[in-house]
Length: 432
Image 1 (cartoon, helix red, strand yellow):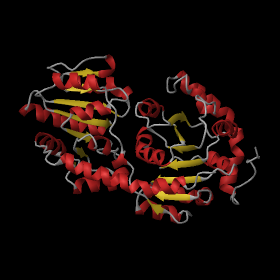
Image 2 (image 1 turned 90 degrees about the horizontal axis):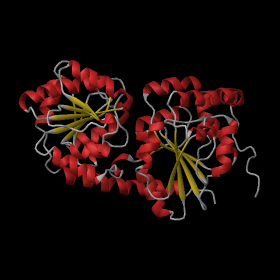
Image 3 (image 1 turned 90 degrees about the vertical axis):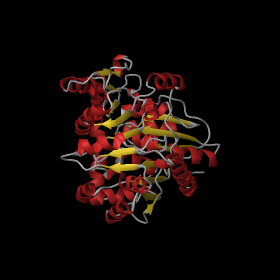
Image 4 (image 1 turned 180 degrees about the horizontal axis):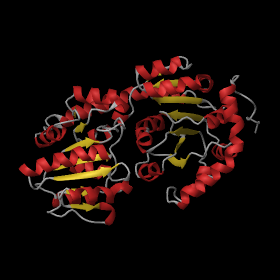
């Protein structure tokens, strides 16, 4: 087998060169960081070695396409692209890497065919080399915002083709990266294909030195519905029959404040109504229950294996991997991260399950998605500030779902058609 580790990098400037020089020096710190996170319960002990490049699975035979995304939402958004590429290349396998612990459990429940998951190793040269030696990818695809300079350089040195897709850069992120423009431009020169989520991100990338940036279709509308335990769903549907159920999902404190106040108003008219709160960070479940108790509201907590009783006004679903269940139970979903500074979470997970969406005003992370959904009458953004709880409660009480299924079906079909050219372009890069 020929040696493919020779230098294949374009000339790089001092910023990126300095980072590469520091990598081996920082490796011992990286190892201690992983050990500390394991001791604090922030990493899965069984899978923590993956963060140091030790493989947790065998490499399948044949072509292997490696795709990286940082967290749960980003990883789940890749599923329609993986499915389309899998149809086009039935001989290929796909390795999806991520960094967030939460991404593994939920993604493993929603894996497309011939797809494996591993955690991306930390960016030390020894760890990345161990990863690349084992997996030997034939194409490396990086998604959204999580770019690891050392891993990208090491991949390019091995003459493994690189692509950067679904790129998203806000104005704040652009202004920060201008301070490292030389290093960012050097990284962009290593990618054979670059595609952004929207025109604004494409413009920012080009101003930072990327060449020929394409604008790609959104992957999120084409996603397969999140999985669910059918038996559990049927049982809860029977238990909750006749009750108005709405969900606040991927919530943060600012979202919960508005939703809890809105639910108190709803209960004045509909005393049997149920709000399901799914916190973005499940470990906040007990904290939310304390807030509810202080508000005089009856609640139960999923992580304590509590069921939903008739007298419960709020149910705190502080577990991972069950959003597919809660969205199927709800008449409408308020998607969190939108009443504070987080700038929103993915609305499509609810939409593709037939659940209309409400949000707060701050949705910059998914601006184009919310614009499209509002045009189709499938979402509504609510202004924050005085009266937000009344506007939210009125929307929940008067949600209309006429023609929802037809509208969603048309959007999903169109999105899947749009993904095919992207899948074809990426597969054309696969190393033979």
